[in-house]
Length: 357
Image (cartoon, rainbow, N blue to C red; front, side):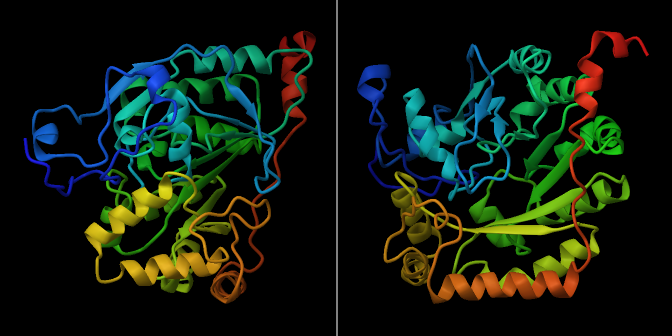
């Protein structure tokens, strides 16, 4: 077996930093920072789906940077493999690495819809928009097999409960029938994440996501179906995609988006070495420039954990990015806005007497 580092095609992370909890959880399966060719060729790096049995599914959002109070995630880990993903740092809590394990060890919550229904039918539950998912993509490839997202949407519709979806995957269009019903009652927002119009860059950054063309078509299809659609250009990575702000906002506005949002990349925890290893392999001539520009937006560090700053950054580069978005919205999205959520319908449906009608 060779110790030579290789470029793993179709994957984002190229290394597997050890989980700090690994000795407690799976000491029998040591991880290496450098992955070697034989591991890829013998199939040991293929995606695995691991069933879990959670007792609850809703998570209260404590961060003031997130607009919704609740989130839920039917999957943990994400095969999309976005190298910058902040959710990578949650995988070590399960005893896995934030690196390649995050993309190949996908935890599946088969009972998510049942748990969701148990919460929504409680007398004590008060309707509040639930972010679906916020940690990993609800329409990642696993959803084609397990259809957990579809089952959860059926629960949201049954109880007429508001839900916000964020995804990079055109698989969301499979559920257009339910989304149209939810939208007609002002119960759903869909955010499509589009980080770049450059398909080559997309393939490097987000290797197992759908193409830029498919995502733009998804925005257009949702809009024509009267499903409120928003685009997240997240994250902005200075030196990689910050020059695309105006053309991207124009493009998604032409496709019918009602708004755009953005965050600036932050490389907390294990994501920093994962991203640095990745960019030095894939873009060695630009690596130092990109890493230094990221540091410039976070006070000299790749990390940013402060509420109010962690998604927006600070300094001249961050301010230029924010100013470009203000200009783009004024130019291309003026007078457009997402509709509010209907919070009243759920209480009516939950009432046994009114259900008879």
